[in-house]
Length: 380
Figure 1 (cartoon, rainbow, N blue to C red):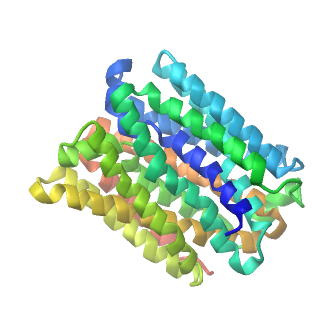
Figure 2 (figure 1 turned 90 degrees about the vertical axis):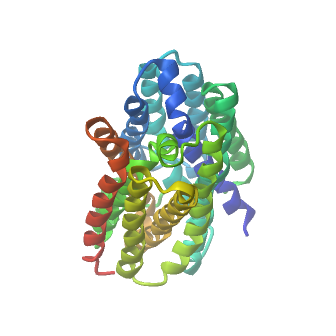
């Protein structure tokens, strides 16, 4: 594999770790900061909302900038903001810092994937995209579980120190290996029009609903694991590995499914997301006894695999339709990813506060069903 493409995987690795580093530590954070679990869970809503706003705006404002240099600036900001979160005295300060971080971090995925597709011919774009996005899966496989372990041993602030280090490492690796002097060929308002041609708006809406479905539960994964199995502390990190394994398997599966029509591929994957969200609620609402851990591990892995497999499918279709406006299309779809995460976090928080944590999976299944209906209307 091209080392320049591999280096770009460190950008989503840094982003994914930074975005979700605390999700296994929600309960200790809530105790230390003197706030409720649902309130800490809304940190993901804040980050995702900022990403959703910042992605399209910044993609337009900085469309003439060198892609590599812009990505390096984003990673530097992410490292600084993680450091600020580690030192913040209260939840409001952390939320403010994460909003600022998310606003700029929104460019990470579109910049990294745009750089990757410039290095390969069109027929292997899905593989290049999947390779870069594999860095995001490494966040769930390595970064977030290690953050949970360090947070359990040394306190939750240690997790943000880890995220700072990973962002700094990504800055160095990409600075050395990634291709330079890559610019967006079509800046300006025409980029947005080109990015939204054909079925692209539907694909972006499906992305938002799919991620919204999953993050209704994933945003509260620490409490979900405890509610399903009774496991706490470093044991949560061990269970979290199943999400990383699933996501790692999902990206190459998505690259293969991209050979099918988007309608067929996304319908299959979203049906799996719907099923696994229901299984989350089954695990929390029913006493499964000795089956609780294997059922949860299976559910987390399968859910993660299906969700991450949707990304190469959607990104490939977006790139084909958008052509020279691919960066803008990726930025808009990234905005939908983050908006979906925020939607899911808000949905999960609302259900937790008004009903019970156990019903978050049912709420996620409803969002997945809406995404499935929309996928059935695709013409590609």
